[in-house]
Length: 391
Image (cartoon, rainbow, N blue to C red; front, side):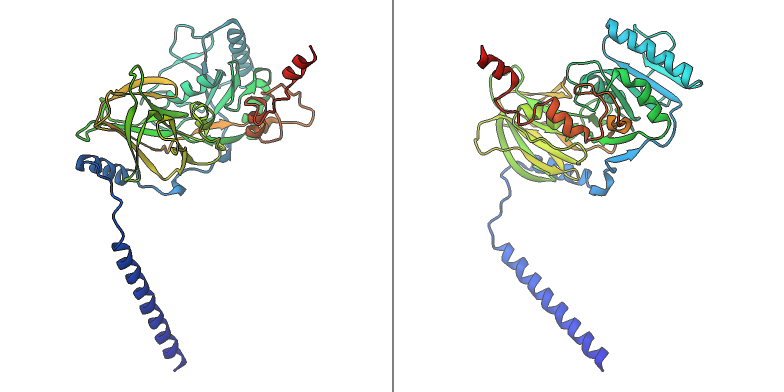
């Protein structure tokens, strides 16, 4: 009898909840629709974008993990071979061949291939690479990322020989210690998310010869280029029309790219272990157009408006790629292929020598970098100003 009474109560509770939900639905139906007045073609683009990019946040890999298998093949990617770079590559090759015999070392097909390295060609038939070693600046890492545009990127061990080096570089003097950390399985890895960018014609067919998505590590930027006119760009998020942007352009960046072009345009700084998309306007006409941060499960479509008076230029990771005419669009979402970057704090020791902005340290690499390299929240009472005030 008691069991029957409980069942009756559950049924009544369910019916009551159903009535509440039905009433809420009827109430919402009386609110005015906020659908945009965009054309049916534009709406179709948004629906296609939303349906084509459905994913759960769990599909984005965990940010931190370790290097489990000793690499058997290494790819060297370097900036133009200045004398310091040549000496560093020669020392690196000699160390690898003498300390880790049997490990194959490759170099991309360029006129300045160093002696002792094999030629490596990117593409579907490329030799399998277990570790990428970069010698240069942030641009060298972006170039290394572009070499693996069709799939997974091997772990990247970066040595700073450039101008900024914000992407967790090791000091070049620490290359032997860094390699030892990798081969002993002590190296920790941060997966830096990439963006997948797919371009569409006005008739919704994919632009380009193969229609494959472009892989971007920092950002994709739509800009007015040489045109004196502002761009008019419709923004859709998961198929919903967000706004019509009238500005010099728009930036969609990764957390890694949040300290690059997006930061210069007034965007927020986002920790690289997060999975998010940052939308930042470039010189918008509206004072209330502020940057937005979306979850990595979101899909953002940027469509050049029919009222736009000129095509929009497109640059990805700082490289000009193409233009988009009115009616054409690009859809951006999180790529399933991040860039695994080896942390320099993974080789830290108690008595390690500290190199300014680049040496190993047990604290968070990112926290130290935004202080040392970006001078985060630096006051006006800097050493330079204090010296100037004494003269």
